[in-house]
Length: 503
View 1 (cartoon, one colour):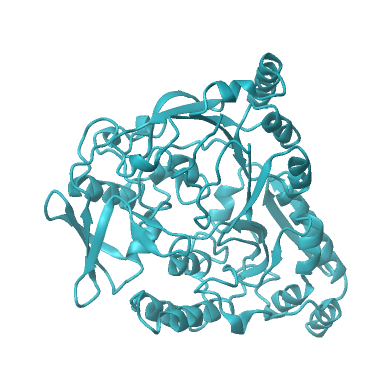
View 2: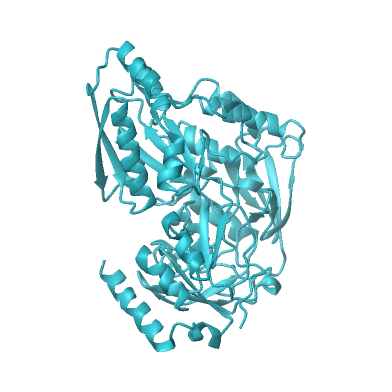
């Protein structure tokens, strides 16, 4: 809280110094002042694939990228080739690139990064790399992944969330790297004060530097939500993401641009079917019919969200039309299911442990608690500071989670529903037929005419899981000064490629 108070004073001071016209920003149009919840880890292996990768992306270039349609496209690797069996893929790196510290971006650097992600004790990415058996550096620019199974998802997997390649020289001291990023991304760090700000300058050695038109990015710890619009309006900041739905109209009236970014996201109710009362399938079925998704959209997102029963948006290749409305909202049916199972109103009391998420998260949890109460389940809402440890340790009975998805739809499914999935609160539990369906989806080349059907079949099998009840999807909202041109609409990702700042 102390750093937020300091930042609020900083915001007020800058605004007073330069006035409401935003003259400070206009004096140097090549500087982007970005407000965000600063990530605690700058080593992407420790940071993991949560939404903070959009900040680490400033310093690191990934092996591959995705385009506006979610297709894998070149990044540090300009191309890739599979062997005939589909269990080996070679990435061909762009020649002559260097990291910010001058060390070469080569096959050995990629090899060492992926091996570190697999083995480092505090790696948050090891579970994403189980398809990789061995990595060989075949030349300066060719690195081959030898796989444990046929897996055509690898080019999608090794994008921004998993394969932001770090300097192997800097990574010799992982603790130092975690506090001062050294990559081959579009910007290099020049100043960092934890919990306050981190400043970057353009790196001319970035592979796509000719399309980076911003000279400096100043990333600040965001102010309180109620102060954000005023800070943007006065020119203290130029850019922010995660604007609360309740603030969107205020931002528009202030003359700011508000952009709803496409995402592969969903909020869900996470259930541990290994503990009572959720080991009784009837209780989960009752919850499935007791959640009013439209009410969540109307009340929590102010109409900006979309009701959903699956982790993919309707336009996406992995979305299964057959699973569009598996368990329609029917509270009377929910109460009857519980009664038939021998549970009367109030007989079930459960611990509903959630993380501290003011705004959308808090409103979601409180409304879910009320909806469960309406069908006779007493969910005792409890906010816990160290939520991640018991959640990822599968030690909670009932919780909530929001995810921005993954570049690889198979990775999204295995993260949510797989036996080792970090978002599967039920641990080793998987729905019947899931493993077989996922295997077929992995083994289907991305350009195969069967790819969409096989992927949707995997989604269909996954959604039979009793461990997750999806509720709504909410686009990431970017708010920015009109002086900043629109970023490219890459699903779930914030890129500054092509972005310009005008006078």
